[in-house]
Structures are given as structure tokens and as C-alpha cells.
Image 1 (spheres, one colour):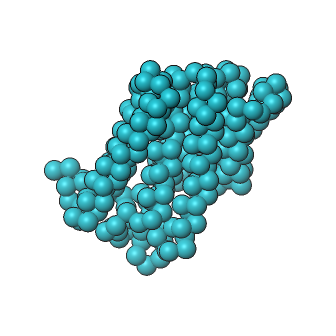
Image 2 (spheres, rainbow, N blue to C red):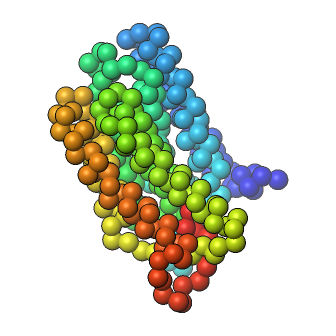
Image 3 (cartoon, rainbow, N blue to C red):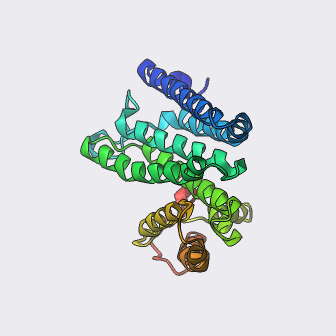
Length: 269
């Protein structure tokens, strides 16, 4: 029996409605672009639809993790997805819609603005969903997984579209690959028997992620100073890559750590 089959009826119904809503949103996007041109809409759907399906599938797979992470109810299954997770899902769908422009040339002025608007909207929603969860007292493991998963998606989509449109140099694709290289490194270390430790806390990790989101949004704006963006891109990229390297060295024990740290596995969550 699948994990989802044991969920409360309301939670299963809300997850199904979320999937339906995602499909409606993608269909609306296709119709909007179809008014500009059928070939353009078909190119967009070639990427946006599979990515959107992946966004919803990710939610459905992790729905059993809709459990409280705070207070005396820690670990208790929530019977509803909640507003915060709904906002996070919309963010993921916005990134999926932005991904569709990977194969769409920025010919029409209105089309050229859409990736920046979609990705920027996702960045704004990223600032909102956590606030909602904390204010209503509903932070969940599902919310954490969705946040991390859709952050990773955004850091793949935005650089890929920006590079495809000539708005960023190709070196910025390394940001899209960084987390996958990190996870692959951990997988290889586990295969070789190395113990993987918990990811250490960092005061840089979240601020750098916020910085990258802002920089990528600006880079996607079609009227920005492309020459200046290309010039500063390596400097904007370097700190985030260095943090990935530092985290990898820390969790694999290649950097000195407190001896009380116990080997664990959440380093690649």
C-alpha cells in the first residue's frame, strides 16, 4: 500500500485539488501564449508541462510528511495542507511556467518580460509562505521539503532561461548544477563507506540564497544593463559555490568538526 493511501480523506482531496489547480494554471498559460502564436505556446508547453507535472508529483509524494515540526504536537499528521503549503505550491508552478521559456525566443516584448515576472513572483512568495506558517503555527516537514525542492527548481530554471536568452554567461549554469553535484558527491562517499554528518548551521546559507534570487530576477529583466550583468555574474556566483564546497567538506568530515557530532543522513535533504 502506498504512503498516500493511508492519508486522511481531506488531505488526499486537497492534494488532488492542488493537482487539478496546477493543470488549470498551465492550461491558462498555454491559452494566453496561444493568443500570441501557436508555435510559441507549443514550445512553452514542451518544457512547462513536464516541469509542472514534476512540481505537483513532488507535492503528492511528500504529502505524508505533512507533520508538525514545532511544539508539543511535533510529528502529528496535519489533516489539511494549509495556506503556507498552498502558497509554496503556487511558487513551484510559477517556476514551472518560467521554465517553459527555455525554448521560447524573446521576440515579443510582452513575452520577454514573463520569465522575470514569473520567477520574481516565486521569489516574493518564498518570503510569504514561511511567514504564514510561523504566524498560524503550522510549520511542517512537508513545508520544509517543498521549500527546499522548489528553491532548487528555481535555481535551475532561472539560470537556464537567462543563459538561453543571453542574459547571463554560461558559467552561471554551475549554480543550477551545484546541488546535484553536491548530492552526487555524498552518494559516492556513502558508497565508499564514509560517514555523512549533519549539515552544520550557517549564517551565510540563507542570505546567499536570497541574494541569488534577487540577482537572478534582475538578470531576467529584458531591459537591464546586460553588459554589467555579465561582468559581475562571476562575482555574484562565487560565494554560493564556495558555500556548497564548504558544506560538502563539512558533512563528509573533511573539515574539522566538534567530536560530539554524530554521523547522520539529513545532509542531502
